[in-house]
Image 1 (cartoon, helix red, strand yellow):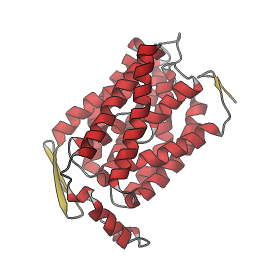
Image 2 (cartoon, one colour; image 1 turned 120 degrees about the vertical axis):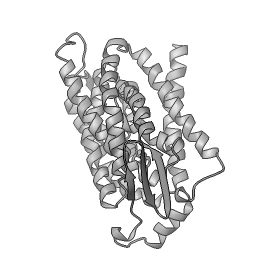
Image 3 (tube, one colour; image 1 turned 90 degrees about the horizontal axis):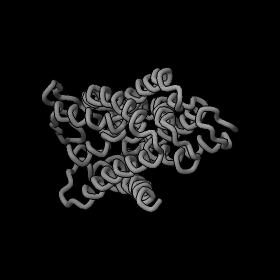
Amino acid sequence: MLFAVSGIEVSPWIPPAVSFIISFFTSMGGVSGAFLILPFQVSVLGFNTPAVSATNQLYNVVAIPGGVYRYIKEGRMVWPLMWAVIIGTLPGVLIGAVIRIKYLPDPRNFKMFVGLVLLYIGSRIIKDLFEKNKKKSDSDEFKNLIRKFKGAQINSFPRVSVKKFNFSHMVYEFYGESYDVSTLKIMLLSSIVGVVGGIYGIGGGAIMAPFFVTFFRLPVYTVAGAALMGTFVTSFVGVIFYQSLSVYYTGIAVAPDWALGLLFGAGGIAGIYCGARMQKFMPSGFIKWLLAVCILFPAVKYIADFFIN
């Protein structure tokens, strides 16, 4: 099957199959899988124009709702966290889209940028895994509780309870632990992350998930839903923005490849839903190691290729 915008030819079953496998595992850590689907498009399919960033965001728009629904249904959506991410990342995503088109249209330079972003995120996760002091809520205690209630109704599981939310702080409880984080710090960090996400084509929330775990010490079981929802909203706006910019940048492919993005999204929505459902049965350490390996592999490859080629 030939995709007109991207100019690539691939069997129509491959994009949804690849996105299902990737998103199933990455969604457990609050990441849609777009950060790995983009390298697949670039390195395997040969899709290198700025339109690949827009197509990647289109994948997010289609794929994420199933996972978000599951986290809401299970009471693990931290709404204040979600709003802080959206408010912070949205302007940055729009700025990042312009930077991608104007200053990083060269595939070689774009790959180097992607590699550096992934290397930083992956190294932060690895650092966190080797730290000895872990909070109980992100430990095996929650896993033991889930095993105890396995097969029970969803309402039997621990649910997030928001105690306070304003411009300076948000406080929520989960499984007997209270978490107090700075709303302002999250929004400021999100604004920077949003620029990076806009350039990459993964939305801002996708990169925020590792930051929630490493910098703010929040349990992965509670940040995944907020990160995915933030990614969905910022990606939706990003797709519209890229499509609008295509009117002004006629000499290069900018608008998303809708057919390709929808196929990736079709596999992603099933993968994210299944991953969100299975997350509570998976050890948090396993989820983090999986994310780290998946992130560092393409990071090292892209950086090495930049200097070798």
